Length: 329
Ligand code: AHM
Ligand code: MG
Image (cartoon, rainbow, N blue to C red):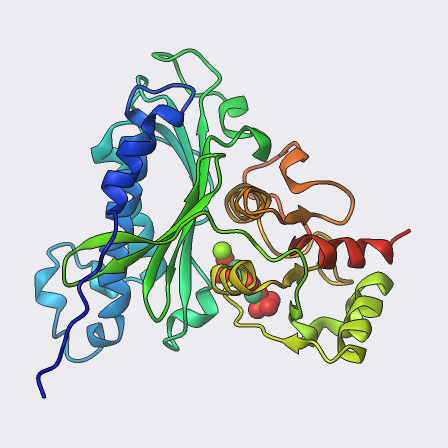
């Protein structure tokens, strides 16, 4: 019998972005272009991720690379690819990246947008062929266009994000994003080189039965977290923890659940970074009907004080997040 290849039906990401352009308060087309630049970077990283294992096999693919990047770690390569795509796009004046200590000034004073990103999150999973992701937040600069980028441009609250999203390099590659009007997910068809709308208007179930936390840290958790985990066990909930934030978040977004990276005795502020990990997922979660908090306040209301600031992170189905928070009072 002949193999049948399913032909994707539905709208491409490019078309979708174009169709939605008038939703933006500033409908100049620049944000649309920026989202397309990010999708392009995602395609390039998809390619790198998929051949990552091959790079170590006698340099089979290494000859393609004139800059010796194949010698570098995949997260560094992803960072380079992303920055290049954003630079070529021309809409961005500055980037904050997990891979760079300082703000990256793009030397493009006319750019209106700031991107905060974790180009390849889930570093412990990179070398073992497990799902990883890219996370991004987009802000509009507050300083005048044409002048230098200020620290205030970069350290904006998550509530100021004009768009946020992630790419998940899993059994399929997906891009999920929001511009503040709901959340949509697109699945990549590598044979066509296109993302297709596959998950329109994603809503997270109000309650769920999946909890995701690294229980290895149990002895150092705060009492309310311990209490909540015990409660999950009593109710025979499902424990799922990939150790890649995007993958854990994505599953819980679709199925209902909670992801927690709490404060511990060793890491009082947790592990995850506010500016390029938590803010984006908090916006997506809220847009899908869920909740995100650091245990004290809404993630999106936290005023960042530094580029690589860490915060405890509770994100997911509203009933579950509220339930952990009850233990605090
Ligand atoms: P990374 O930015 O170094 O990859 O760290 C972030 C990752 C998240 O993807 C994941 O949820 C978490 O760290 C796992 O941490 P742990 O191994 O402590 O459970
Ligand atoms: Mg990370």
